[in-house]
Figure 1 (cartoon, rainbow, N blue to C red):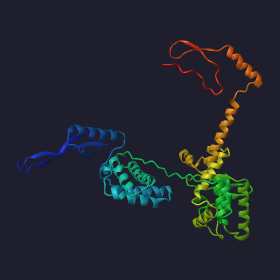
Figure 2: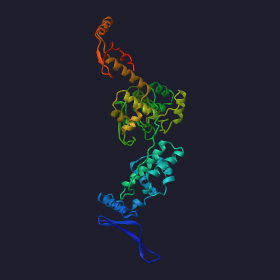
Figure 3: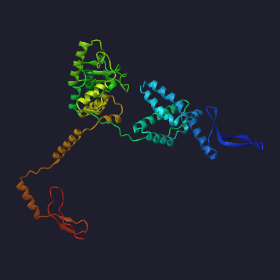
Figure 4: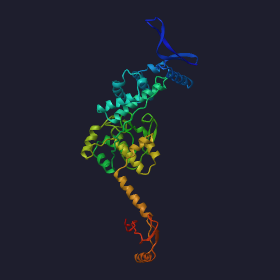
Length: 408
């Protein structure tokens, strides 16, 4: 059972001990006493703090003194260790995020990081011209630091505040039509041609195709027509199997033939004179300018590959297995709708209504006689407003009723 008390100081005028300052609490965890300030000067509020502390002891989530002493800088090492254990390669980007966060949260105790302070950081970054996406990534970095601190034993973070989220409107919508892909593939150099073809037909990521960690010939089976990616190559750390057919398989067979003839000891599918390469931005931009596709990126091929698989009738789950997407939300961002898709939707809708239209098994002359007979026996309808009855002629085919306007 815990207790509350106040520290006492000697009054210099009277020489007596006088209780001053906030209330302190004493509670036990596994028989071990803990002393901690409640930060409250009113006893009623201090009792609530003590009850919360005892409740966390029962749940095994006691907030030790570290929760109140931890500063922003104390959480950086935990984030870096998490990146190392998971083998992530984007730590340099996190270093940039932390540098911006330090300008506001440097030296600040974690318990003082509240939603108001986070909103102030957002306002500051917006005034500096940072994009919404950049600010969101920086806040994601801070949120991850707090989560890791809360998961630490003993916890370094007691409560994680609500994080504001800005709307992002920077989702790229670039993709290639098949004619554009063929035109660009004919304008680039041979080592880019292979990378383009793989990305276009499979939606593979750029780093899964090129560089020293990219696609190797021992992963390609031309007889079976398959590509097998190891877990070390994929972003989500899951192996994938991709099958080839048609133009894709022919290009890979031709690339293997050239490799065997010119550089037989080169293990890489995409190589430049027998050696791996890490980028081809200059050659890519020059080829795009040459065929009138300025501003296109290699990543647009990944979006196109995913869209083509879906349009070809491949199920979303299978497409996600081929492209390496784990979450549905990210996959939907790549599954882009083009104007051709909208035209096809209008065409399908029209065909649907054509099937639903009712055709009369009569000739135009017989249909005219039917209309004439309808005039002899006009239907009777209750008038909506006054309760009386009136008659009217037959309804037109368009669905509009030609009723006279009732005078006021």
